[in-house]
Length: 239
Ligand code: UDP
Image (cartoon, rainbow, N blue to C red; front, side, top):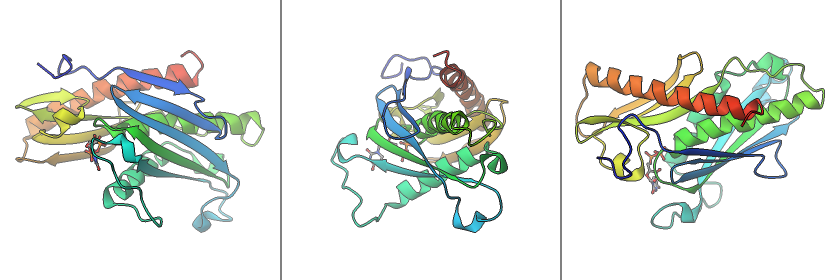
């Protein structure tokens, strides 16, 4: 039995508040169980330096946790210095989003994604990706409404979820209590065609078998598919 009575293949309840903030072109509050992340997308009319003159745009991401988001107060990043974990996570978020963006269609501009964790209970990077995708598309919808782009320049939907082996059993969408004692811990990022964008899998306490990997991937696929559905309802205005 899981701590919150979920089935092993059941993700936590998800809630997305779209247009959460007034200033960015895209903003969502995403809640997956007790994990809460604010994801914003700001458009800047300048592409990355290395892409100047290429006609291509750029999408980049930053990630941070508020001091009060964790059980013990997490020190603020001072003087622009981030810990290695945050850097790893924000690069993951940026890569995941870029994998579905047509940079030529986006044109020479940058979409800045910011993911700020206000409450952490496991799966903050996966919630960030799922939420940031929605914020990014909202920013693209704004660009289109302003006549700056003709089509929404994406090739698919991106969502992400964690999976792991706890007490010998594969489980979907780990909360902190589960994550902290996972034998195997994995983050699965997929598009809506059921293709993989990135997989981070670690045998934290012991190596894991191909059979376990396949079980975890199947759980991840189920979770990502369900999240894609939620994303589609929101960005298509059905949510
Ligand atoms: N965590 C924390 N303080 C930290 C880093 C992590 O309390 O400095 C907790 C938090 O609940 C987080 C969980 O540990 O969600 C798992 O962290 P991990 O690095 O695996 O990333 P996440 O699962 O959040 O993507």
